Image (cartoon, rainbow, N blue to C red; front, side):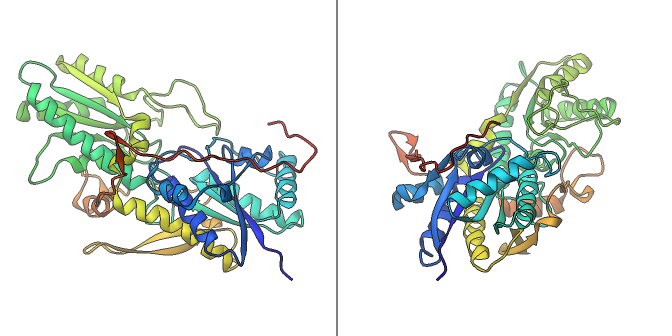
Length: 421
């Protein structure tokens, strides 16, 4: 007689407006397969929840609460930036994970995150065999940076793209109104360490019906002060103002980030942020006009109120697909989004081996960037457009979005030993 195995699900890295939709996809699909799956345990604060045996029993949540996850932003169970080292460097972490999984009859490991999460998922799949405890490890894609390979796009990105495009258009209308006697250049800083997908979305604010003088600074194009200022000067002369969308990862020809302060995050990546005032001051020094700058920061990735319907549907679909793949005995894989056609836009779920996903970044193709390096091409617009399409507004109460806060009831610990991070 086969004993039903439980699922361990965790959220990792920077959260998004739709990562909870993926969680809903996992939990609701698992509940529909009670004959083959036990409970869904969530890790409190990502993989840390597994290491410290701090698990959440999602079966204690009502069907209505889980359904509300679909329109609630951020990470309902808490996320983390914690990267597992290799087994050779820190074997005790993997042994601890297996101990926790075995204690709680966990046979499925779902990690919802970006590139580092895919790497973690792959490592756990490999080590589970070595440690003689079978785990089906499935990575659920999520990243606002849209830099995972194989998949056409990443859940979380479409909503950020929509937010940045809308915000750029609205702010540009504001600047245009004031440009005669006040601000002439507005600079908006967006996320994107190495890939300029989010910055590219700013270019969508301008189209043939609503022309806006937008200049985009991509991480893929080395920053050239002279060329940049020539374009700014030309735009201001022609339109009376200009809007600049700059990726946090913009750097010089030597590969150094303009905003690199010498700090690093938990993954060892350079801690970025603050490139907008740097670019704005360059404009002030070279052009002498009044400027304003803003940083989209957490607002761009948490704006569920203006999420893309396409994004919400795809986020839910990859969570649902993860359960289906687990039941089909898949291991070390990631559900992907496959673009079938642009017009009309059609997509389906595919599958990729984690060996092809982990530690690989997908950059903006040069064909998506205009020849001068400061805008997006028609090809890029055809790619971005469908990902931003559709509205999926959350319910409102008293003028504010009605988001859910789960009870997050803890699972009783079974191991005698504590784990120190």
